[in-house]
Amino acid sequence: MKTKAVIFDLDGTLLNTLEDLADSCNMTLKQMGYPERTLDEVRQFVGNGIGKLIERALPGGTENPDYEKGFELIKKNYGSNWKNKTRAYDGIPELLEKLNAAGIKIGIVSNKPDPQVKELAELYFSKYVSEQTAVGETQGIRRKPAPDTVLKVMDILGVSASETVYSGDSDVDIDTAKNAGIPCISVCWGFRSRQFLIEHGASILVEKPSEFIDNLK
Image (tube, rainbow, N blue to C red; front, top):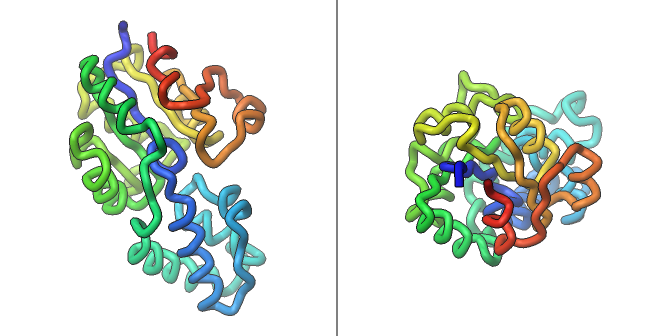
């Protein structure tokens, strides 16, 4: 097998964070006097970071005069509620264990704030990733779908593009892998449907974690 590293998206790929994100979003909207959003609505809003989440949830988005206030509030609310209901998807610990046993290095890249990515990685996946190989949104480095964070983790892991696979659950992840020049394995258990992923260019899709390793080369 030529694959030496797999870099994963976090939300909707390794962890089901949707309920904590939705609760934090609705807490923010309620505090500001706006209607709350359904879980399915929030599912469609996530994937580009918490700023985009509140932009999409607020009527008028960034044109809303309350946007900046909402952005600060949701950061505070999610910072206090990021691990209430979050859990690893079924089969993910077993997948990471198999990759680890096969000598395949593991990284995590997310549009979440870097401190939360590192805390979640430490809480759920400390056996497989280090603080250095779990990277989130950081000042001075472009967020996904720019390839910067993926390339940073590849450099830390000491792997080339031909030795690396990226995996995520969204169109942002498909574009990120393309921009980094590496293949993408799209997962169908996350926040986007199989049909959505196909329509946005997914070429390798897996329905459950137990199928993942069979798609590595």
